[in-house]
Image (tube, rainbow, N blue to C red; front, side, top):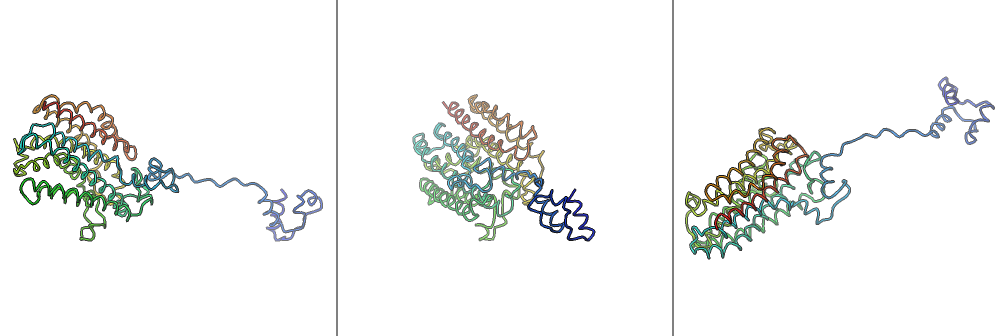
Length: 417
């Protein structure tokens, strides 16, 4: 009441109101000295506790949630350097490179020696070193692709605060674009050295300076590792900075060809050349050719490799629109992408059913992995999960491919006994 009285007097122009003796004795001792009403009102207001201003509730950005799920709980916490490079290279994706090579190795080490110039002994002698070299080559290409994708998606604006997947090292500022691009370059250089060595040895064994087919595989794999996402480095230096397989919707085809067919057929083809076989490429893959059965076996492997990319693109299709990334999911929508995923998964099992008709019932062993496929199909193809809820099913599809390939390998071994 005193405060209102003083303020009322101040508003009427009485700027120096002295309280009466009655009020003077009842005021706190620290304000006994005469002062203006406005000063006294301000002081009383400061003495009175005021409620805290309402806090604005902000949802944690998806990128922050992704980072918390990875190696840090907030933007100020930087993981160790080792963990940052592990995050950027995504070693958990290497199953997509290793699983097809396991199948390819089994096609040589367990199959009848069809087309091998030196017979079974020649085929088996080259199987293990070829498998180790080609698996290393495939893994290095995968790591280079992952690191370049971390770099290029950031500089092109696809990885920002709206990201729904796991955190990216460049996006979070844990690595500079130059560091991730440099890491990709090192992996590509190592892959090129390995691929060149395999190209030369395959050529020498078959009486040529080098093998042109394996040379094409090496060069195209290295090129596609950076062309998958594109970006100014290194393609910009040769005027191809605008090229990007993923940004124009060719990522699915790339996965099928290189992480399906090439990864599965690389070891059998190299072993054939090392044994001295000089048949033409088309002759090898035609009906009755040495690699015809291997080609049929590679199809279901490629279907599941593509399914991993499909669920990844389904998750990111909303944010990809903002970055002008025209994946198949962006071009044709979520319903099409879910149907594509279902077709690829069911197609892989249909393919082994066809193989079982040609090679025996042991080829039906991959059907034992179908219980792992059920939750992926429910969530991706039929369940309607979307956005960050699909993160678990990217890894789930990769695990399905690995289990499928291991059972396929066992089926091949049993069918050729």
